[in-house]
Amino acid sequence: MASAEQLKRMNDINDLIKLIASIDRCTFFCKSMNRIAYFRFKKKLFFVDDYTGADVYPYEMGYGSPNGFSHGGNMWQLVNSFRKFIITGKCGELRDYKEIWAYSYGGCMKIRHKAKEIGFIENIDYPYSFDEWMETN
Image (tube, rainbow, N blue to C red; front, side, top):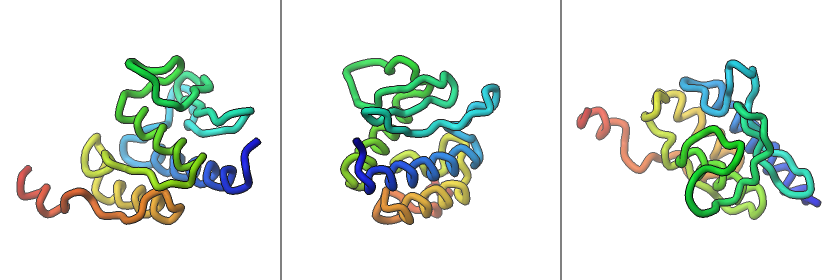
């Protein structure tokens, strides 16, 4: 059974996923199914995939994608980071939510601010500055 703290963190992460699904590229939103991915507890914590609708057991295992997961390896890493935060309360990372993958600077900052607000990340800083990125591209 999940603790009250774990349920709160799960709901906070689900709110973050809804935000990610509503901005720019809309990762974690399947338009054809009109569905947003989310976490839920049964006896254990599961990630419900937006495309397949499958309950995916979010634990890193060997090579390849787990059954029912419709995204790539970087998203699998993010889902596992969300899982770790929900279960343990330890901060995660948004390593790839910067101005890549069709996410604007403004969209990324909204995501990062929400992630900091819920305690998923400790600060909103990028590994590099936006100005440095603009100079190289």
